[in-house]
Length: 76
Image (cartoon, rainbow, N blue to C red):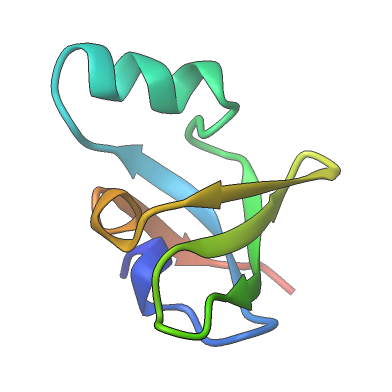
């Protein structure tokens, strides 16, 4: 499952950050690191971009980028 697969209000824990080179480093710099909880907050009217909540702040990313970040389900 990736961030792109989440429905509004759903969340998960990052298990793997994909991408290569500068893109992967940008994800990590934004706080998208394994073990971090994310929740889908908003989806733009045309479906792209999406807004997620991570580490207490909102982050907007493209769906294409969201497909590169794998999640595992939240532990209740």
